[in-house]
Every structure is written in C-alpha cells, then in structure tokens.
Length: 255
Image 1 (cartoon, rainbow, N blue to C red):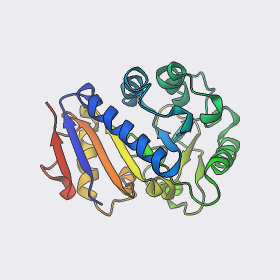
Image 2 (cartoon, rainbow, N blue to C red; image 1 turned 90 degrees about the horizontal axis):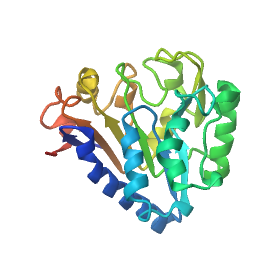
Image 3 (cartoon, rainbow, N blue to C red; image 1 turned 180 degrees about the vertical axis):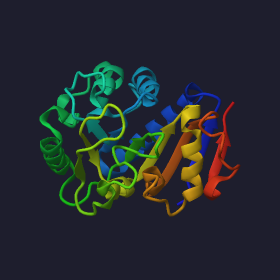
Image 4 (cartoon, one colour; image 1 turned 135 degrees about the vertical axis):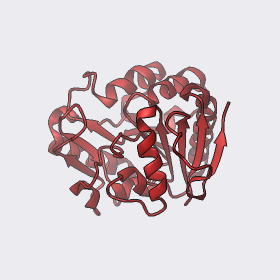
C-alpha cells in the first residue's frame, strides 16, 4: 500500500490534522470493535502530539475504552529520563488521569528478557491469542533507519512468531537493552503513522522512500506499513530529499 505523506514547515503545523485524525480513528475503532488499541512511540517528536491530545481532545476520545501500549522501551526505571513511558506519563497519561488498567507499559526495569515475556503476556491478556492487531501504531525513525527497537540487519527482524522480543544490543544511545514489538505485529496494525522531524533525518527518509514498496533490512522502517493506512508526517527539513510523489503516495503540503 502506498503511503500518504504530510509535510509542513514544522511539526506544530501538523498537530491540528494529527489531532483530528486521531479522534476519528479512535471513534471508528470504538464504534466498530468496542475499543481502541493505541500504540505510543518514544523519542522527542511525539511529545507535542501527546500534549495536544491531552489539552484539546480530552472530551473527544472515549478513554474508558482506550487501551494504551508502547512500541518499544529501554530497560531503565519507569521514571528515568530515557524511558518512553516516563515521557508519555508526563504529557498524556497523567493529564488525562487514565486508569492504570488501561495503561500497558513495558517493565524495562526487570531486564529485557523478563520484560519482554511479561509484555507479551500483557498484550495477550488484552487482545487474545495470536498476533495482536492494533488500531493505530505511532512510530519514529532513527538516523540509521531503525524503528521501534528494530535495528538494521538485526536478528530481531527475522522474528516471525513472537509479538515481543528482547533486544540485548542497542547501537543507539543510550546503549542499554531494550524490548520491542516485532515486525509481524507492526505490519498487522490497521494504521501506522510515522512522525519524523529534523534535517538529521532527511537522508534516511529519502533512502526509505526510495526502497519502497518492498523495503530492505538495512532500513527497518521501510519494511513497516499498516494494513489499512500508512502515513508519514514530516517537517520540511526531514522531507527535503523526497521526490514530489514518493512511491506513488499521496503528498500534501501544509503551510
């Protein structure tokens, strides 16, 4: 499926569309399946999006039927500055006062193997047996093309059965073990939205789009797509090496 691409001069300019799209996806999921299964990304780019949701869309989403997960986590305590959970808690979870039973964090402080095992069990308790199908997965992209904690040419990219893997060696700072959802799970998601900003990401974004539609293990993000929809939200700095119509996708420019 060809990606949809949204480009704006800066990430804040994309927030209104992101917010409206998020509300629409959440409502459709609740109406069609009775709940909304939402996977958060780490990194700095999603921070303002989470804040936008908490400030402007508190009343627009059925949070009592929303289940919150993470695509990956570093094996650090939950209050560590490097924790994806810690950032989301400050910007989204605490402002919304989400009930604990709806928040399914990765317990990285237990170590990667045990945290992966428990997270897989947690997901299974909510979604049932087999690979989970999430309604919306947010992802970022590293300068090396990794996404979640699936790194270029890593053995974890070959995982075909498990929903969650332990990542013992992280080439990306901080160099601590991690836990990640697997490629089959990311590809099973109904919708995948990539949020990418900054000139340091421009070359790898261009490479990713040139490798589509098949993708390559050298650029794990190029191998991920949603079943219903794949969107890339980019600022102009990150999008500077894209062709006008990358991979045949739909490109929209925002002021």
